[in-house]
Image (cartoon, rainbow, N blue to C red):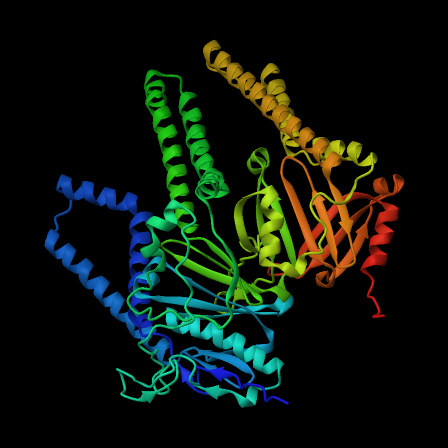
Length: 614
């Protein structure tokens, strides 16, 4: 019987490794200048008043003395931060033990976080713009911990070290699974195949990395990936920027497993992703509406000055809103620059970002669901977003931050793709899911669902209607108080102005309510006609239609809890709500479909029961 080849480690077992020294001085400089910027912005009114006082001669100061004190203060503050960061760096290290990875930190309160290799789910790294300049990044190791899942964050690692760490963790995970964690070999001669001398310590090596200081061999790795194909103009024009590894980045390190599938964003997909992204639109609308409301109050003054201000303010408001949208789109464009999704071995990896670079991935066995979403705009033009539900982690060093909202989309493997290409992408990334139900499969909802959808969306859950009712009641109370003489006006002109404002507001509220209600009615019709459900031996499909759509394809073995619920109105019509709970997100994710026939609900509960192997 052929002896199994031992696993090869590039990190020595039991040795404490420290993060890169740039942690000591890059972090403090960024922190101090961020504090200075916030202080300047938050106290801008005070700075303006101080400048006016100096200009008026009320305060006499020497400008050179002020500049000197500011510079001295920044130097002292940066020095204090560097001292603290240096102490933190001395007490920060990571260790590869036989069966687990450990991260040590803390100056006064010591902390050790450890992750067994068998529970490693994904190894991701992210580099901000400043970190990219220096070739360092922050590595996050997610474990399969369910609702208590914590991500171990190791900051300021060289790109080369981060890539080695990812390969090492999955290699050690495989060794533990094979029961060979005690037979690891350190620095086996795989790359390069010839002897070389380390330029730092002079050690003779035949391994890929120096056994003394860990420096990579000064030779090209024969297993390096081929040059990436430019999928769009931005990829081609920014290839150097996208592949730039920074000052301390080092040579690229690649895993032993080849890439079997890869895709990026075409020119029109990148453009549509940028234009239709929710964040720039929402921020621009918020800014525009805020200024419009402010101008509405200015117009209530009803004098020439107010009208002049409003006349000049309108184009300024439009310009600020458009500028906010454009700057937001530029940010989205940069964040999706050099986008790549690939299948490497058993893992699905996603990389994106032109300036700040982010790399994340997931093992195929950890995929909780496949999510296909269409916003209203995407539905109109036949595009959708494809993501994989996964167990996300809150950072161990940032437990106070609630990232659940940011993680609801899971791992986005394509942000803007034609609906007819979805199956091609899923089959390429996850051929293991080939026997899943397709989006066109399924059983439609019964006719009773249509009437309930109209009542639910247009009446009971129509927030616009209830706000309009509340405002109408308030308007009626004010009208009664005005007519009864409780509210007095200084003149007939002020009374006429008040009546005109109230009437205009009433018409505007009713019009907005009517438009929203019509939209909800259209959504209810689409939902009732096109929503459906399906399941086969291994997968569940829930399709919720409407002005926007959402598909959830869930492997049966990933459903933590399958339930049906019904209220008195549903029971009267023999309807139930199907629910499937998975471990996706930082806590859990519930996929559901309302108003499914009761007999289908019973069949679903029977389908979800544990099976016995034949």
